[in-house]
Length: 272
Image 1 (cartoon, rainbow, N blue to C red):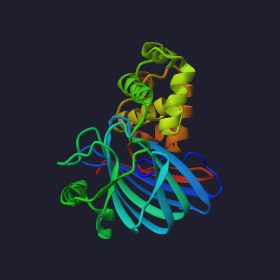
Image 2: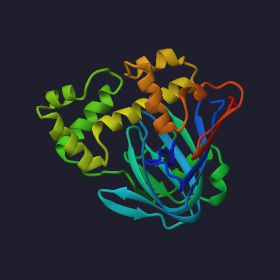
Image 3: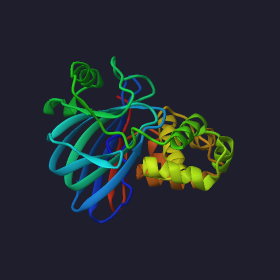
Image 4: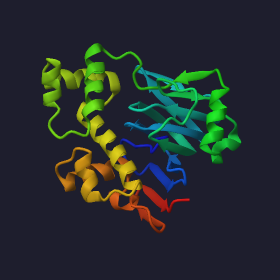
């Protein structure tokens, strides 16, 4: 996960260390290191936010799944930018990497791509500002698409668009399928074939991203879980921890706090 990166399966072979901070301009800054001893596969969804990151591969390899083919990263360091409602699938093989990501509700670039892309960038940009990262991107002509699916079926495309537009509304996704004139199973099958995950999981992921950003902005948990479409607080806690590796309470910025689990260490910094 560039992003916050979401690791699909947490195993003894995958260790994540993440530091999260809110910048003075209101951006979310995520510094992360990942150490995979075998093979891991992760999915990330940006929700309604822009993401701009720089990644350094210290060992192993990183590949992206694009239209059921893999795109191997050839450089030891690269930038990645993803527009709102992107889905990115990454394969990590014996990978040791570190990344710095910026997440924002507004555009982070002057030239905005309409799909997730990777681009060349200097290694020393790993600790750079989003403004300098944007300048690196703006003057680079060569980009490589890395979105999970560039050419979805019409049904998958319509289903995703409907979910993107209504993700914060409560209710079952069977209603979306009914509005599209298909069965829930047909919609789910088309969506999974295109994007690599079922629509219900995708909705959980973009709800979680929205919840995380609302918490960072200072909204109370009791308000956030309802605003993003959950009708049950315990379910919100469960899904939030699944995708961010930490409980929502730790995204309430104040003093520096930390969270440890078997596979992750996550620290949170006050605004700065």
